[in-house]
Image (cartoon, rainbow, N blue to C red):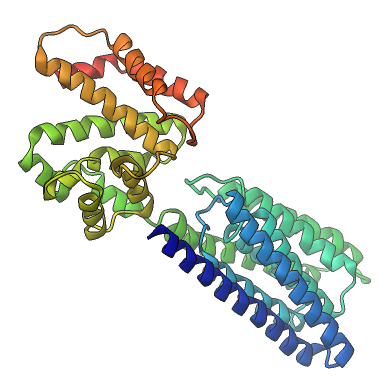
Length: 401
């Protein structure tokens, strides 16, 4: 099944990027008819854009293979292709506007967040070269928008999943203002007047508004696409968890404790705490349909529209044919194991005084003796940190009694 899915993704990628390649040449051809209707210039521009588009495609694919994406852009070929082609269309129409009013900061930043820094810079530079070429500008205009676009891509590539855009937006607008001043205002061959600042000021204002609106849309549809879903399924009173409670109170409270510990560890390790918490709640949810097999868990995930990452972690954890790879799965694995060990000992003797530190040390030691911790993403430093936090939770373990 995975082989078939991978083949489907390969053909999908080939089809989208082939159409993107052809469309880029078509947009350039039409732009040349509007601005430079000469056979030699037309051929040169089309050839250069096609070569550059090939480099952009290679950069996107290479980034996906090496895991260079930071904004969940893996597999989003169509989204990036559409953004790139729209940017080319905008670039081809910009020569009709004054050069000091070109919104290239927006183009660079959006191409960067829809791919990554390297790919966004390459794609944005192509769009900028096309506009400069059609408008017949000198190198200073390219210099202006390339530097401001580069700054925009760099500051927006450092954001985490909270996606706080205030400071990066301020920095990128200030850099754009500085570049406009250094390359446009200072070289006006006339006495300075307020009117000469009008178009650059409008550019700054429009760029700021467009960035705010587009980044807000990007945040809600990409970064926090599953936020509401996680809020729903990570509620202890979620109908699915209520069903588990009605079937087995022991399994329900086991899930509650596993989710609590997993969430605390995930936040400390700065990994996907919402996904870990969800997997803590639902790692045994398959028992609602009989046995806790991956087939049953997967059916429930599909029925309740679980986020893809949560389903992926649950598959690693539940499916005996899957290898444990992600850090999130490792956290759920240890949290479940420690909760199971403590509950087992309290079930044998509710008044037992347990040495939690020794118990946790034993659990970690046994896991190290197996092959479960080999070939996955977690580091020894993170395992040490995980163990430290588990030991700190001594007071909480008494609630399991």
